[in-house]
Image 1 (tube, rainbow, N blue to C red):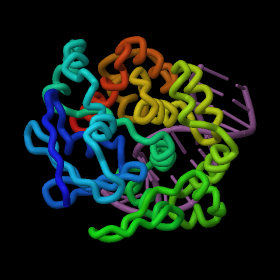
Image 2 (image 1 turned 90 degrees about the vertical axis):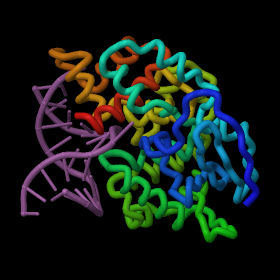
Image 3 (image 1 turned 180 degrees about the horizontal axis):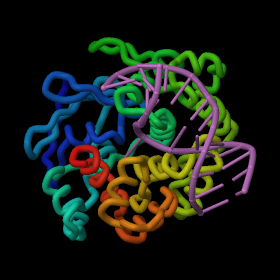
Length: 278
DNA sequence: CTCCAGGAGTATC
DNA sequence: GATACTCATGGA
């Protein structure tokens, strides 16, 4: 492999970021990780304040790495805005955990599979979908598969989707792949305001509050998005908004108002904290 | 065996 | 708006 290296000048923890449950297209390999992102397939490893990477399919440049891992976000500046016991603890424990900027469709597919599921199963579902409906890639490191495009997934029958092991999510994949094939643009949502982008996403059958916020936060550059799942509900009701009878919908609005412009970063740290400390 | 999991749609009040 | 039921499947 042909390696390229560049220095990090801000907090970043590659392993922690990949393991944080926002991105599922990776696996450990030697001292680092293999990553599938759009048409790119590459190796990456971290050594203290350096990243070393090598393209396997479709050449990767440092700018793409910076974009995928949001290395231009002022993470230290965001840390400095936090001042409560939970976030103060979380930023010490998880220093360098960053949000990623994934492909919107790949992110949508991932978080449709995430409903009432868990990380190992989500990863397995995505691999099965890739092998059955995606594109085969032949590399010197073995065969790998790309996730199916909306057009490729729309070729699958409802029965084939059920047989791929995604359970009740099959009907959502079936309808949404067709809605996007018919002209719904995920990428166009980047250019409108958060409330409108969220409303439009939720017109897709199977995308509700939580999945919409995941897509907006992890792929469409809306750092104010604040996905509220079971873990976030626990920690918000326990430490931030106790005593109120609050639905996930109301908790999300309260949290966005409370945590502000970079609420999404706070959410990622709270999610990690809740999963490992509660 | 039962219970629940990074939810969402639907019916019902 | 809030609650209850349903949807598939795998793991504890």
